[in-house]
Length: 223
Length: 274
Image (tube, rainbow over all chains, first blue to last red):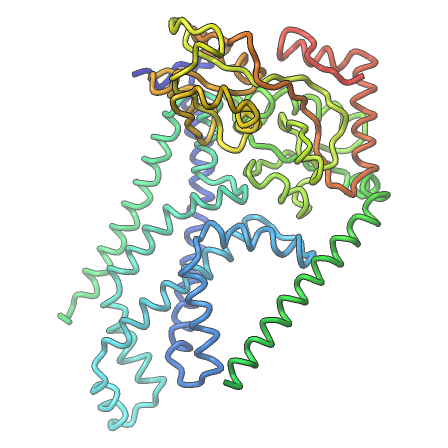
């Protein structure tokens, strides 16, 4: 089967360099989102566990909306609602980072909460008896254990995020997938798409290897 | 009970205020923008052109990864004459009107077919190019008329004017075995090549370009499904900007520049603006 049938002979070096530009954008999106959404998720998880109704209910609503609607729709909402309805101009890349962050923070929040609730409450009681403040208990006793437990799930979400950066193409961000589609039209061939797939795989291999190392390092005790 | 009432009241207030805000900002935009749209662009010094950069030959990437195309050449000449810079903004074609109305782009200039539905949302220039929706088949298929396509599979780009053209030819559509909607024209050509589909319905301009560029043995049937025209799309309120671009295109037609650019891309003058 002939995939590359173009008389416009495929200039591999310029095609790959264009895809690399898109990859850099995707990596930027990924890092900014991870760096912002991991702490935000922890904050949201803490608020979710709060006993105060005025705090808990909006947080639950936020979690429902973020996890219950497609990310692609959220991207379009944040892109077009501010300028069209509120008259606020927005920048594409900023919208993408913002939208990914609030979406992934919701997922991370529930992951954190699952981890936190799995720590036996007896530890909290023991810490209280020993005179540790709630903050000290959380930071020194609970959180380190939670982190160790949730690493595989966080790795999952990170790998999903790498692939989800492709969704930013619907708001015109020139990341890897969009660039691959442009190249497909230029050369009338699906080879750029296959190369893009390879780039995503390479990025995710790095992510997987990173988390694997983190897991090994945290394995200095069992449980 | 009280809490529920309180929440629904707040939600109602939020919804009403956002609807009011939308109404206010929309009317404000149309009245004041009518006269200052051209001035705004001149002050900014740039016209932002929105396009789907995967649509050869109107707007696409060449092998040096620059955005080029027939529409791009026209736009460059027009903005040169207007004394502003041209900024090319790739967008998702499905959101073209949204991008226009939200101010991210100033115009849609990418083989944009003029239609009555679109006229309700977009302020078009005069038509600058003629186009037809045509059927492409493999050279060896023996199909020469629309009637020959009875019982065959046709594919087209989803959401394109090809889909509209097919919908308005109900008999022809009913005679087909299957209509496949795809995301873009390159995929359609893949289906034709791989014999998964027997025919493609698409813009004649784009079809001719692909066939020549790739030296394929495809045939374009003589019978077309719709005659269309391309125009440049502006926001509904941006009358002065639209008029300026329209006048520039007319000037280019008068002094032969339009025909020259058309020649470079298509080997002949396909423009219709007078």
